[in-house]
Structure formats: C-alpha cells, structure tokens
Length: 640
Image 1: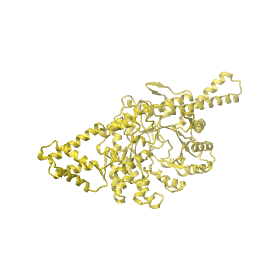
Image 2: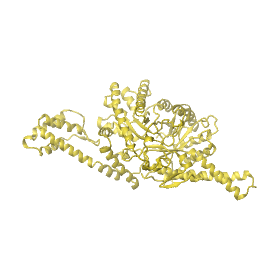
Image 3: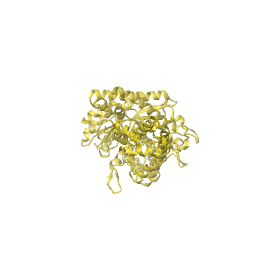
Image 4: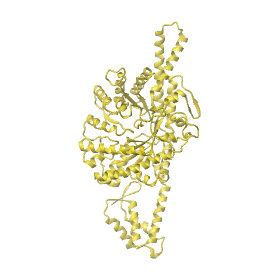
C-alpha cells in the first residue's frame, strides 16, 4: 500500500508511524485511558485490511480517530486530535523552508517543470522567486479558503500565479501605447514628454515595457502602428534639417534621397533599440519582459506607409537573430511577434503581400511571428481585430460610454484552470457522473476566480503608477481606487482548461478525430463556455474561457493524478487546451481543420500549432492562404 503524503509524494505504508503517533498520545493520558498494544495492532490491521493500493495520509489519520472512538478511548482520541493539529501547525509554520532551499540549490520541482526559462541560479531571479515562495505560503495558509487551497494541492484546479497573489497586481494587458506616447507619461516620478523622433519613441517604448513588466505578472502587448507617427516626425525633421544645411535651391529629389538614407538609419537604430533593450533589460523579477509586438497594417491607417516600413524592419532584424554570449546566432525569446493577415496582405495580390512573404520566411527560420486572420477574428469578436495580451490571452469586446470599442488599456485579472482529465478519472470514466462532477468542480473554479477579483478590489492607483496613473491602463488620480476597471467587463477573468484530448479518450474511448469523440469534445467545450457566460451574466464581470497554453500545468496535473490515482498517464503530461496530443497519428492539415472548430468556443484565448518542418516556402504560403480563410490564430512550429 502506498501512502500519499501532503506534498504529493507516494511512500510505502509504514505501520510504525501509527504506533509512534498513538503512543505519543498515550503518554498524555491516564493509564486507564491508554490504548493497549493489542488495540494499536487492531487499528493498524484495520487500515491494512482495507486493501487499498493508495491511501491519503489524512484518510489514515481519520481512521485512527474513528477507531479510538469506537474503542471508547475518548480522551485518547482527543489527545491524538490535538497531536495531529499541532503537527499541522508545525508544517504550516515551516512550509516555505524546503521550497526556498530547493530553489537556491536548483532542486525545486515546480521550477524544473516550468516551461519558461527563469534562470533560477541568478541572484536577482532567486530574490524574486524567494518572494514568490513566501507569497505561495501565505496564499495557501491564509489568503485562500481552505477548500480552494486543497483543490489546488490535489490538482483539481490550478490557481495560477499564487506566487504573486500576495500583492494586488494583475495578470496581463494591452498597453495603451498611443496615449502614453502622444500625451506623455511619467516613470519613477519623472515626466516623459511626447517624443520628437522615432529613435526616442522606441527608447521610451522599451522603458514603458520594462516598467509595466515590473509591476504585473503575465504578458503585455503593444501595437507597433503607434510608432508610425514618430517615423514621420523624424522624416519631417530630417527634411527641414537638410533644407537648412544644403539650401532650398538643391533639387528636391536629392533632398528626398538623402532624407530616405537618414530615415532608414533612424528606423534601423530604433528597431534595434527595441530588440536589444527587451532582450538585455531585466525587470525586478530578474528576467526580460514578456512582451509581444502586434504587427497590423490597417488600410485606414494615416501612417500606413511608415508602419509598413516598421514591420519590414522588425521582420528583417528578427530574421538576422541575435548573438548569444558565445557569438552564436540565436532566436530571441522576446519580443514575441504576432502578424495580422488581412485583405491587403493575404497573398492574393495585395499591396503588402511582400510583408507576408517576409513574415513566412521569418517564421520558418525563427519560429515567430504567429499569424492572426483578421477575417476570422472579425467574425468572432464583433468586427474587431486586436492583439492578444502577451501572446495567448484575449479580451472580450467592450464599449466605452460613447459606444466605441476599446481594447488597449485593458487587462486580465487572473486565471484559474480546471484539470479535465481528473474529472474523468474521479468518476471512473462514467459519462453521466462526469457531467455531475464537472458541475461541482466548476463551482470551485468560480470561487477561486472570485478570490482573484476580490484581491484586487479596493486597490489604489498608486500601487502601480505606470499602469493606473500614467497611462498604460488608465490615468487615475493619486489615492483613487481601480474598482471601476474591474467591473462591467472592462477587464477579464479567465477559466483555463487542460486535457480536452485525454478527457475525450477516457470517456469516449477515442479522440476528437472520430465523430463520437469530436461530438463529446464540442459538447464539453460548449458546457465550459456556457458556464463562464452564466458567471458573466450573474456577476457583471468579464469572465472568459481560455485555452491554457502552459505545458508545466499539464505536467503538474498529470504528476498529481499519477501519484493519487496510480498510473493513469504513461507520457507524464496532459495536452494543453483543446489540442491533439503530439503523438496522435493524424495528418497536420486534418488536425488544423478539427482544432479550428474549437477556437470560437474559447475566445478568451486559444492558438493552434502547425508543424512546418521540412516544408517548402510555397507550401507554407498555401497554408497561410488557408489560415486567412478559416483559422483565427496559428503558430508555425518546427515540430520539436
């Protein structure tokens, strides 16, 4: 028999542990109240006769209490309960010791499962991680209701970002870069006026990115089209300077040519500033900021010509890559790039098809950019096209008092993900019981998400001036509360989900590739979407359904389920979101078509991965044309 410890470890049953615990309680009572050796053996035999392959340590303790009571050792049972409670207090009082020592020694299991490179051996990162362990401890013991903490520990759900929950900060956002550049901002209490050149605009943008990243967790995005204005300002400045330097009588074509030379140099330097600063800056967490550049060329853009130049330069510099400390060319992890396909660049003869071909070359070589179809996105989001927050999470449409849709300057309050395969395991793959159990677990997820919301209520703008006072999100007054930004759907709360693929196989016996499997998976996704819609209606808050992309959560859930329920998943992970498992024998195009049917059910965030390894450029161009007509959001992967 395996005993499941509180930290999830499975250890062999040891009868001496029970003997020692009861004897310690025996020492606290009079002789007539003591349990005899025979009675202690009887209790141990009772536990062993249960013949269970796995048992929780808490269940064993409950049985001991019940057996002592049945033997009418009431005083002894009371002492045992006190002993048990005292041990629990000791554990709680020292709950961070091992995790902190583990990360310092680079032995922390949760960090080893983290899919993001956090550099845990670096002192500045360790400082942030140590603070995170303290936050996790206080979150678990004090800030969260016991049932939510227990659900997180047992893998029923994942209470994301508990390492930041101690502070009233939110998850991810789309920075209102236009407002901050056009109207100025402030950083570290110093005024930063509207830039007067493209180079300065790029520098200010990277400073904003660093400040924002240091005051939130999760990703952030900026729309680079707001930089087009400043490239034109530089052009006008160069034109004026050259006319003053060489005289107005010089042929205009010569001045124009010289202006273009200076402008291209300025453009290259500005984009290089963004790329190098993002990859060399360190936020207070000791990591580069998690930022995405949104590359969208709109036909009604006043600065469309300038923005086409900016996008081209960003892609060219990404193709060039960066050098690591050994001088090897590498693909930088940040900034992530998201490129929008629209009528003017969808490879059907549009004016900006050349940018899309460049984006394809970049993606095949450097993984990014991801591709968004403006055509499909408009269908799903009330005619709007906008950036994800970071690179996955999406806002839902929201209108201001003038009836104008707004996306920039909005954010996500937090994420809680449900472990779908565990629901199936808990009911032994019985479909009828599955829906009943799912309902109960979704209620827990709702309560957990409301904890995220309540933690932010009452927060004053001064907690993060860059966000709430200086324009990244809003321009509130000092001392003003952010509560209005948390309500009415202005910001979102995300219900994530893991393991649709495994759940479908458990309940139906086959994956979504079959008619029955696909029908069940669609039914389950609709149930999740209907649930968050009902929460939104009930509370007036911006609940959304989010396809959790974090591989470490899938590994954590699978590990917990394996330790609690036995070998239920040989591969050691659950697939994220609604994706097929990578080992499923299915044609890539068929998988893309099936998975695309799930995207409009997961509008709080979803992405599809498509393997382009060993594919020719013309094949990928055909794929891009298909994506534009049929799929909202795709990342081209290299199959690894």
